[in-house]
Amino acid sequence: MKSFTATAALIIGLLSSGTCAKSDWEAIHDTINRYSIFIDTKDFASLDRVFSSDAYANYGGAWADLYGIDAIIEVCKESVAGHTSQHLGSVMGIDIHENENEGSGQQGLTWPYNALQWILKQHIPADVPINSTANSTTYDQSTLFADPYYNGSVIYYFGYYLDELQKLEEGWRITNRTWAKAGPGYSGNYSVATA
Image (cartoon, rainbow, N blue to C red; front, side, top):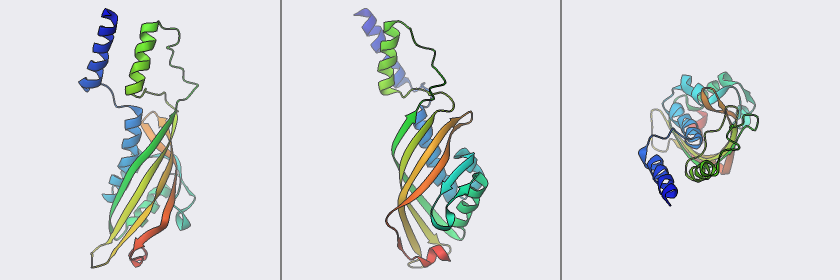
């Protein structure tokens, strides 16, 4: 019983101390969320904190088949030029795929350690090795306002970002992004988007 009490105290301490490093799940969330911030503030140079240098993106139509971060940045600049924008994303799911070539080296440890490791994994996602990958789905609602704004000069886009990410030395980066429309894809004054 003494061992169980000590283990429970350790778990409670780790979960409540705030000293645990950011999990991969949280880091992926941050990467995806930064996209909206950087687009809406027009901080395009910081998109290298979102996309890998060799990323591919498909936003549809004339903005399909974008190879490399420079092409992605140019389309992002073009998409909000002359507009004020607000991108709202809600990450609906993340699946992390650990790189099997990077073993943790923790096999063969004693039962108490493995039990503790199992319990912690249920509450704190593991830190996966470099080159691990992930897939995510993010619901997107993007709003463009004409700048300067006039009555009715707004368009709303509805869709999903389907992302593939990879854990690199510098952190999680999107390597492949596809935007898929939901319903009609937009609502509002379409002339705002083409102005």
